[in-house]
Structure formats: structure tokens, C-alpha cells
Image 1 (cartoon, rainbow, N blue to C red):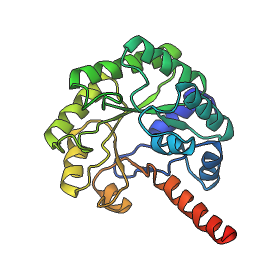
Image 2 (cartoon, rainbow, N blue to C red):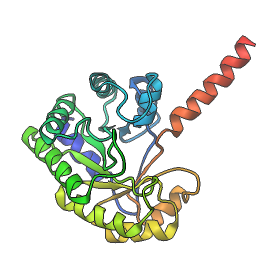
Image 3 (tube, rainbow, N blue to C red):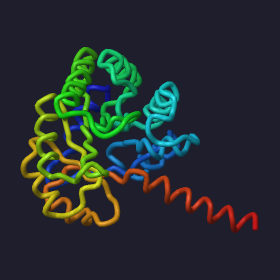
Image 4 (cartoon, helix red, strand yellow):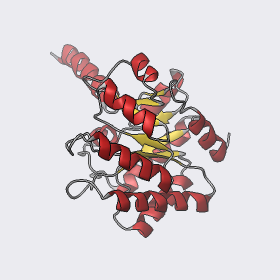
Length: 248
């Protein structure tokens, strides 16, 4: 299956009410284990990728290393691969487009792209982030790949928890070329239901404390469920426990 076919297959997995479940990876080994378990696609968690390399989240991992990890994952699994690309490693649209082009050359078919100002404070304005999404879309079109842009908003991660703003951003991001809308931190059924009803692209919710079960999320119209850093944290807890028993 070529890259374009994988991109189309990945997009088709996002069905409202029948969500694709992504148990997030952090390197080629974890990606292969997840694929071997039957996953239809592989997606990374930036937090997990950073922690696995001894870095903090927030674009602390050098871009060249992110690209190397992405390339190794694509080579290790015959599945669509989506990379958590945080804020794209640049505030400049031309540099952002160049970064996206290099990722596409590695064979990825999806990205998470957030509206948090990674090295600053708060969120980009709606218009500015929409422009950034448009720049990503144009870069993908130049490569001939229907990249799945999972536009992430951090409204529910310490930026007011305003459903109205979340809806405004979701509609603007969709109009700018986003393929999906990722709202980490949203947790109540009412909030989730409003977002899935009003945003015209597939909605992604992240599993965390207080979030409804996967079955309930499906009933609320969610199209993508991701586990973020949970798989990495659980794997490290298990490793720590077993190492402790062996060396004590």
C-alpha cells in the first residue's frame, strides 16, 4: 500500500459513532507491538516520545530526532502512521511547511497539530491558527498526499474550558483544511456531545480521568479515541516493578 492509499485508509477509520482507537506509541518497537496486536493505525504521543528520549514535552526533542523516530516507525509497521507534531516546530509558515514536507517524505500520513504557543503562553488566535493549518494543508497538497491534519485545541487544558470558544475554533480549523478536531481535556458527556454535534469534522477525545468509557464516547459521536501518554506510563511502571523485583 502506498502513502496516498494509507492516508485515505487512515481518514476512513474516523467514523462518527464508531471511533478508531489509537493506543499511542513512542518508538519503532512500541509501534510494532501495537501493530502486531491488531491496530489498524499507529499514532505517537509527543509526551511519550519525549520521555522515552530523556526530554520534556513541548518541542524539547530536537526536530532531527523527531524525524528519525518517525522514519523508523514508518519502516517498522505496515500501517498508516500519524505523528504528534505539537506546534510544528516553527512560528513561521514557510518553515512550518518545510517541516511538514520532510515528515511527508518519511511516509507519515497524519499529524496532530496544536494551537498552544509551545514556546510561549496561551493559544494562537483563531485566525492565526487557521492560517497555520492552511499552510500545512498547502504543503501536503504540494506533495500530493491527503494528510490527515488532526487540529488540536488546548482550550480544555488550562485555557478556560469554554465550549463556545472550542466550537468556534473547530469550525474555523475545519474551514482552513483540518481533517479532524482533537480536544484533549474535555470530559463531560454534555460538552463532548455539543462538540461532536456542531463541529463538521471527526472529533478526537483523549482517555484520561473522568472521561466516559469508549462505548459511551462512541454514543456521543466521537470518531477517534486516543490514549496519549498512558501506554508509555504503564509500560514504564511495569518495567520498574519487574526491575525492582529482579535487582532487590
